[in-house]
Amino acid sequence: MKKKYCIVLIAALGIQGCSSENGDPFAEFDPYIATELPGRIEAYNNARDTNSIKSGNVALYIDFSAGMNTAFSNPEIKHLMGDCFNAVLADQFDVYKLVSGAVTPLEVTNPTELGEKVSDAKEYLNRRAPIQMGVEKIVASNSDALLITDFEEFQNDKEVTSTAYLKISFSKWLAKGNAVNFFVANYNEGKVTKHIYFTIFSCGRPDTKSLLSKLEPKLSLLNSKFELSTQSFKLSTDYPTEKSGGIFYDPKGTSEATRNVLDLKSNYVNGLKNGRNFEFYPFGVDWNTIGKLHESYNEQHQFNDFFRKLWIDLSNEDSYLFGDFAVNVSDVSEDYEQFSKCLEVKKHKPKLAKGSNGEAKFADEEKDPIAMKCYNTDGFLKPEWMYKAKDPVALTEVFVLNQTLFKNTKTINRKKTELGVSFDPQFKVKNIQNPGGLLRVDIVLKNPQPNLANPALDQFKWVNESGISNIALRESIVSTLQDIKPENKVVYSYYIKTNQ
Image: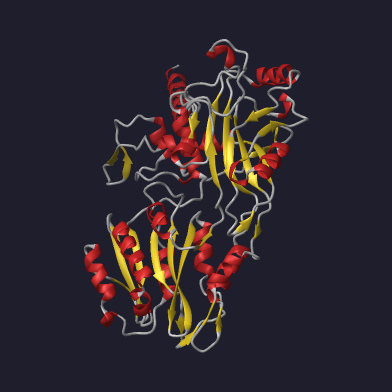
């Protein structure tokens, strides 16, 4: 009897230990809890955003090759440089000079000191400035930069006149969601007409603190400018209130509750206010209710559009001719839930200790199941809890772009073209396979074409002192546009979570 009792006890302990070890550490975790949901959705959206996040100081790069002394003596150019110096050096900054085949720091502490350096003829004794090296250094960073140069590149003691020597660097910069803005000043060096390029490398989406925002009002005095970018469009919303969003409200409702037929909750998020192209819509109704509302209001010629009042400015076609837009719908529940768990894991770092033989282990008082399941005993996160994006589940016959609205508003005003999302003509609630999950509705740019016929590209070529046409900078820009065509690029996202 005693022997049997021992065996049963050991088995029971074994079962208990196995259950503790293999149980779900997230059994009590709710990825959709209302108080945490807005922050998690924003973090999830940011995780898939390919745009650069700024870090480091604003940088100023100045070409100190011999011919630049003449250019910098031009009254208009000299005045603009002073304005740029004052703007850049007002913040934390780094200054570099390009000369003698090297990019080296220039030790200055204020605009006056920098102006004296630029005005000193002794600083311009070498003909060669390593433009490619300077641009590569800018591209390797994650901060705004201003490059002032004529883009005359010499390699192996020969002027580069036809090779697209900046294509790789420009392509890398644009691929990170960045842009290059050229402001062009003309001057004469003897009988040769030349250009000086005030070139702003904008990191991420510009805001009021960006270098572009500070310098553009000053440099716009120049008639010639060009934006090299895959996202030169600008987005805006025109919603009745800060918390109303762009959804349908019953115009005949006599109170907020009766107008708000989709029961949009207060934890709605408009990321565009913070420079993020997304919104999150938490509804207090389920998809069956939404389907019934669509049917009933549709009989009154209402509620055919799910989202409205998102405007896009398509007037800037320096780089690309914008074609059609479309809507893609996907169920991102599985990916989002995994992301939320990976995010939560970071809050549960385990307490560690050393065993009797010096081995790494969890501290005896550590009882947190997430910490013990998701971390190794050395304190490092297990690979499976480092977030890796999963492909979403594509959904069809849910939403489409309101093409009639798009074409009509684009014809009237390219600066204020409306992107509306409508119910698909074949919409049925059953098309949403996981009604309790998280849906993402993406507006995508379908087929932009490089604007290679843009006459503004001619300002990136010149005839040198030997009478040879230098098209290297122009070819660099053209090749970049052809290489980084933003086909099927997501320009805006809506996240939808219903109350099932």
